Amino acid sequence: TARAQDLFAFFIVTALAFLGQLAIASIMLGGRDGPYDVADSLRRAARLVPRALLIVVVLGLAVLPLFLVIAIILAFVVGPEGLKGTPDAMRAASVAMPPIAVIFVYFAARFFVVIPTLVTEGTSVLDTIRRSWRLTGDAQRTLIGFVLSALVVIIFLTAVINIVAGAIF
Image 1: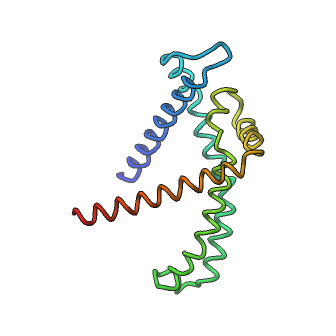
Image 2: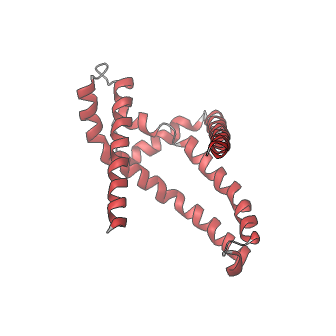
């Protein structure tokens, strides 16, 4: 089916993106014996892709309960009628977005160094997650500020691009 093909294509593209990201991190960070060349980095990255994908799954499952709690509270607040795209639903969604954004920014900052940690230390999935959490502990305010700044810039640029594209097309 088309849906299965789309899902498969998404998985392949995600794996290739991780391969590239891990290879670049490997080239930049090197190893205990010095920098890796491109071929070594690609081989190393290929071995790390399954762990990187598993890290994303584990982190997603860890954050999922928080998002479910927010969704359940939101559903109770707006009720069945509010979920039909009415103005009440839009207001409720605007109320739910700040807590979701806070959760996203906090966890994005705390797991900011997952990939470099995986590349340099080659630890297990859970050890990599724990190590990233510890490494970002002292710098979490700075990292949260960086992630928030990046989001503001992305939102602003997206708005500008939409306005320009709307005027052109």
